[in-house]
Image (tube, rainbow, N blue to C red; front, side, top):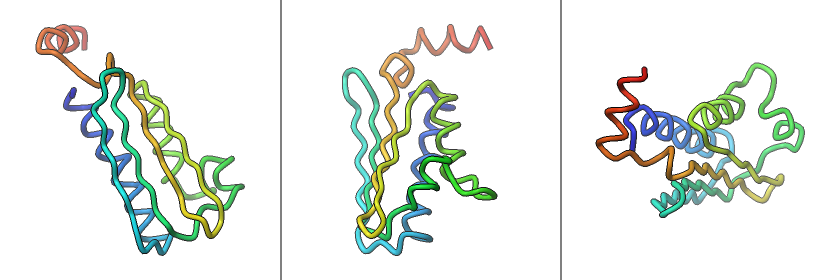
Length: 116
């Protein structure tokens, strides 16, 4: 993975995990990372309180940057972020980044560095 992309994936996953611990009162949290041929997929699930539907449509509550920041960061790295949640039914967050963006060969990395 590109080092900068790796850091962004880490931050998105970290925010999802923090939300599950701080707000969801989850008893169980699952983290799945898949390095697939066509995409990198990171999925975080919890069995917590869930997220209010209004907060999901607004990509986060006013004054709270967690969900909004996660969506923005996913877009910046060329990926997509999907958040599925219902009150009292937990939350699932899935980050998908195309392989062409997520994975770097040494020649691709050199070319990208030269363009920056």
